[in-house]
Length: 332
Image (cartoon, rainbow, N blue to C red; front, side, top):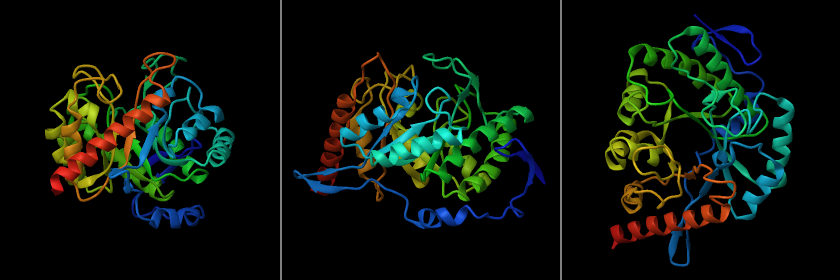
């Protein structure tokens, strides 16, 4: 029997054979049983259009406000991924989450996914200035604290339904370490159950370094047999073995894609076609799949006003056109 701290700070014994669903499950049963959202394609102007998901990571250095959500909605984007940092969203505050739920409804947005927090106690306006949150930390107390933090984000689904929680196994360029793999298993064994009770699937994202590499993630899921899916991050793949090589280990469990660009060295999170990723080749990989995946545009602020939401909309359109062209060529 493993002891994990709950969201309210209590230590509770959790074992896969003893966990039972509570009254909150019924509120999400229909949402959980529905088909996972895939990229929705429709014929328009002789090419196919995809579901656009915009990540609030672009604005994660500032509070998430109703005005910002209104701006996003006005561009025609209907689905968002909310990036969880204490500066951007007080995800542990029920009051703040109730307010966010009102804003989401007011602006007729759908929360497609949440990105699990990677740091706590961030300094306003300064990325990577906080204390890392790692579910693979071999030190038990820090790992359990990280699990608590992830559970707080999952509890948002009790007020704002969302399908996926994007989760890193480690942070930075971490090497493969059996102790970290065991720690990640202990964390995710519990978190997958906690998430399922709230209608959420945990999605592992490939990150730079050995620990979060596509091949390591594939081995992890195969060996542990945990109910986990994958988010293929094109920018991170480009920094490591390349997009095409990285895609193959993840394709069987793939449910979503993160799109952003870089020059192969730093995790810049640029607009697509602003770095040196071959986006036509990347779209060719997606066009060959039987399933269509939501594409999440995950950009980083380069200045106070850039990239703009107009830039993001233009980037979505270019990706759509590239994907449509690849599909058309494959079918001709």
